[in-house]
Amino acid sequence: MGQLLGLRTVIYGVTNIAEAKSWYSQLLEQEPYFDAECYVGFNVGGFELGLNPDARSVTSRADGVIAYWGVADLAAQVERLGAMGARQHTEIVDVGEGILMASFLDPYGNIFGLIENPHFQLPDQGP
Image (cartoon, rainbow, N blue to C red; front, side, top):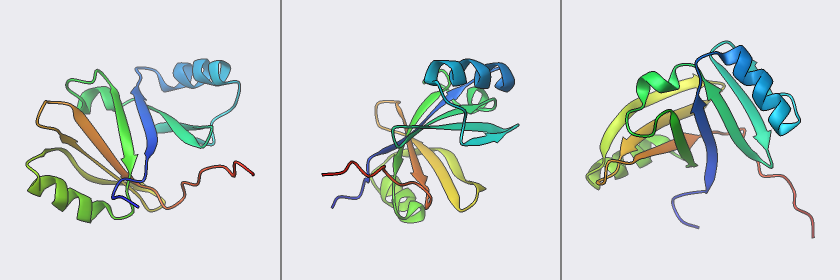
C-alpha cells in the first residue's frame, strides 16, 4: 500500500455555520455526525464533507475548499513533503479526538491537505 490512504475530507468555508448546516442537511438528506460551533461534519458515503467558519481565513487560492488526503502518520508525511520542496501552508493542528490536520502548497500553488483521523472507516461494501 502507498503512503496516501485516499481522500478523506473536503472542507467548505462558510460565513454562517448554522445556515450552512441547515442547507447541507437538506442537500445531503441527513443530519451531521459532528456538530459544533467551530465545525460541522457529515459522513457522505464514508467520506467527510465539513463546514468550517474559519476556513476562508486560512485559505488562499482554493477559496475556502481544501481536499484532505488521509495518512497514517501525519508527522512523518509533513517531514516527507517538506523534503520534497512543498511549502507548509498550515501547521499541524489537533482538531480534537486524536485528529490531526496540516496543509501544503504544492509546487504549482495548489493547497494539498493531509489528515490523520484514527476514527475514519470506509463503510463495508459487502461482497
